[in-house]
Length: 249
Image 1 (spheres, one colour):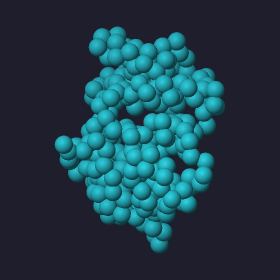
Image 2 (image 1 turned 90 degrees about the vertical axis):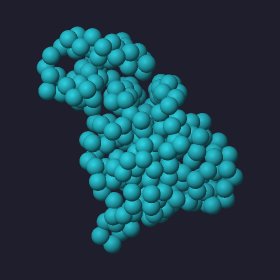
Image 3 (image 1 turned 180 degrees about the vertical axis):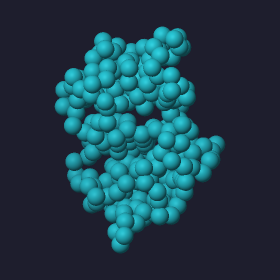
Image 4 (image 1 turned 90 degrees about the horizontal axis):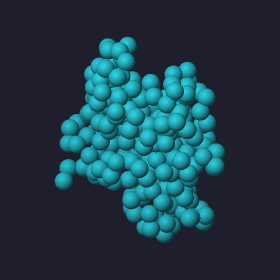
């Protein structure tokens, strides 16, 4: 079976700084991969390379077998490679449901008709309501996102990402800044992701990593230190020395 995502020997140099060093990884349909490593290991740079935010110095990115290395970020999104960001990028004054509707219009190539009410497109209207319900946001449909709690804003980001019908979803620290009391909402949302979706998550919360991931990729100094199951990572002395210490869940 062709992997959904293939990252092949990615390299990134910023002048004399070698940030990404020959990184290779794959994601199969339905696979949940966690990307971890100490601060400065190059995790966000790698996700930026995969998603097309920045171009690699060398290496390839393939989506369902297609080489997308030279494609723009927008083209990759249309092909099914979608990411969220470490810091929320929502429009604070726009109601939650309208933001989901706009994502659906964009996906369907109807952005030039976004001035029309979504009720003119019954299938999209129903899908918008279903997405809000999936993420527990139905009661916030008319609320501007800037008035939501931070954890709820992260849920809106995930709802927007799912509205684009990704095949591969890249989540950059979804729990960052979320109060502990709100974390259960995000955990429930992660559990509700479509089973066929391939997911790569950057996360510092080790309890979440070991609970969520089928496989864990550990970066150190821009290179893959380990790529294995959670149990294998838990017992890897190199990983403990580089990052996890002795506080494993």
